[in-house]
Image (cartoon, rainbow, N blue to C red; front, side, top):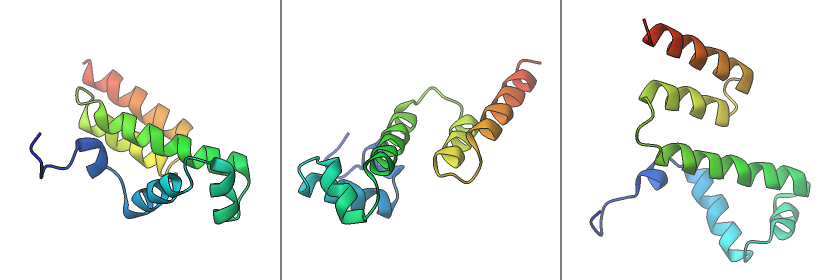
Length: 98
């Protein structure tokens, strides 16, 4: 990777994700402080961080089919339910084996 190339995981993140990361760093990684700043509960803030971690992990899995990554990202962004994503992926994998 060259000095000007954006890492794959970073390219997958939204502006809102980067804003969260910046605030997280400035809060020295304190989810309690982040929850206070966002005026949400600690568990809500923990869930937001967990989803961001999942986005990074998904983007680093280069071997995964692009369609499956797309469906997983829809679920992570809460545009479809996790259950729906699992059903779509299972059907896709079944059809792909034929």
